[in-house]
Image (cartoon, rainbow, N blue to C red; front, side, top):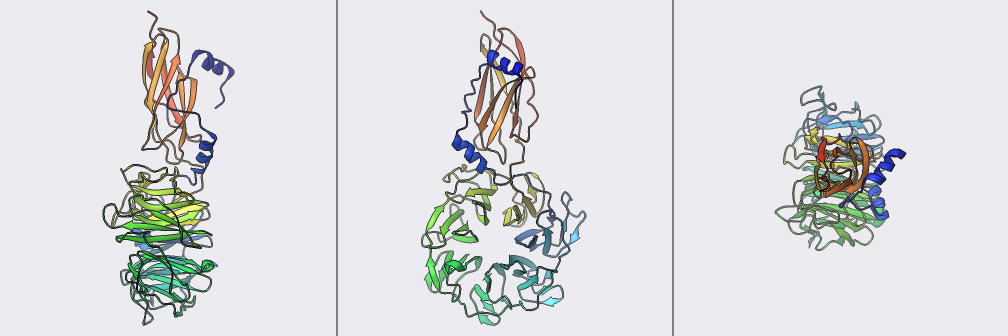
Length: 505
């Protein structure tokens, strides 16, 4: 804010600022602050479900949503209002969020869609879960849709013996992972490889427990497989293994990365690295995220946050995760043990937690919150079992657009004032915080005139005390207010606080 010459002269001659808690930002702070706004924390208007979303996928301008639900409803609608039938599957315009007519009913079995993945060219959407019927067609837990026209394909209908929980694709292959042990009448222990037309390949691996995540990296000659398992191809492999994408033989192991009661729930990758999301069973069992190199399998970092991670997605150097992290005290930029936080953003280079803190409640079912993430045209879509976002009703589905941050600071400061010396008035207040801006600006007004403006970095777990000392005429009486802004949003001024400056003795 530019001051008038008169106001600037008043601020220079009549006020002395002693804002003890707010050091001027360094160039490094300024650079980091720019990076700490990967997305806004304010959710876009989004349709809702009446149940749980287990998977989201993107293809050619459309976001597909799969889960366990009977209907969807518009943004802002309460449960049961304006409901549109959608049986465990729905499609939305990726940018506008508009509900699309693409609709199929997935029923029988458990009647749930657990996995969605588009082909590399975006022309086909592969769907997995626990279902025995799609519309009027009898199927067995895995099918494919043509993206153009949303029609059910007749060629990709493998007979999978149990739930499909993960799908990965290359230009020539579709991989399935899950609870199954047979595909098309042949033994396939929790992982299988098929052609895009649904023909089962000779690829085969012996995995002793369910697979929950797949990442195809054909340029590196690997299929990364994550899940609940302890043994692969007759050897100890805890929760993560890299297989030959053609044969299923083991090509890389990750000893010591995951303890015996930790599972891999999600895998994501970029050109050079991969990222694994863990869920631990029991107090203190590894729940966080790990970054590794695709080329050689070396670990880059391990964040050691506590609170199970359900999904990860990487975008422009930032790793987004859905979890219920409650203790990241050993992670750069992290927070002490406390309340659950259901979304995190981290630097892919060093695991540093960035200042982006939208949140949900735990929600329905197991009380996990968000369970699935996908990036679509720069918008992060998140699905799960939550019923609120940032404290407001929003069920099953939400989304966040590119920054800059657009949530307002969460509260106005409440200053206290005292005068211990003649002509000196001291204000003190506790800093507030913002979900997507680490640095906020505090403006102090005396009798309605701006006398000081200072910046302070803060988080909800670290709210510094701030102090401002004003020089005025001894014995004079003044009213002070403090406002806080992130540069776009300003909260209402604090209640005016009147104080009389001490007089000379």
